[in-house]
Length: 225
Figure 1: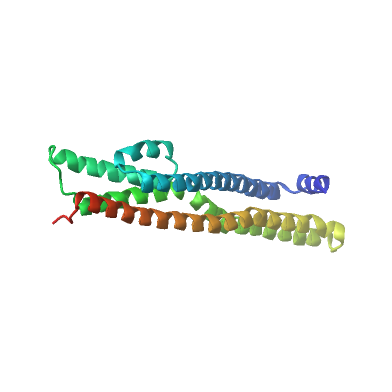
Figure 2: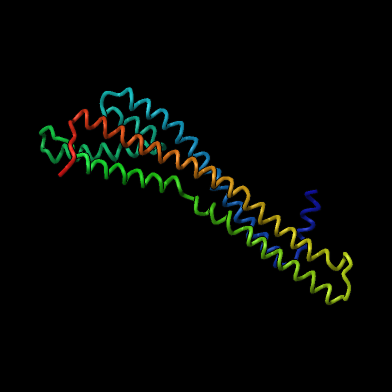
């Protein structure tokens, strides 16, 4: 079957081969994005569990800095480090006195960190969305071209026997199949990965609230006026 498929592709016209090459590039790059995101999310999930365990068992934020360095893949680590840096800055501004932590600047810092981590998680997702929406139309363009060639051959030879129609029809079907081959994995992966990203966003929001609650209890944080 592989020899038959390769034989069909080698016998296609130049335009159909260009269409299939474009679709193959879309497919290769989309699979690269899928593999990269899956591996990243798997590692982030594992490290997120470890980081939360360290956060709940540690008595000092300074002890968590080492865990943050070791578990840098999880977005929670980056959010913690952003919050820790804001608290440290408020301590430095107090010039050695024990400050009342201002919660509004801390909340803004945590939100900025969460937005930055979300952008990291969403890298490559736009390409998957483009692949899932554009490649069927690219394949359809090749389909229309193949049907046009079939009708041109019918007009040129004056009959519609299989030998005349088959080349154009094979071009049409192969480009259609190529478009679907590129689009179907991309749309499935896009929907799945988007669901994972929404889960990480929820985890980041929950962690930010928990972090602020700990800060407020520890340093009697107050809203800034």
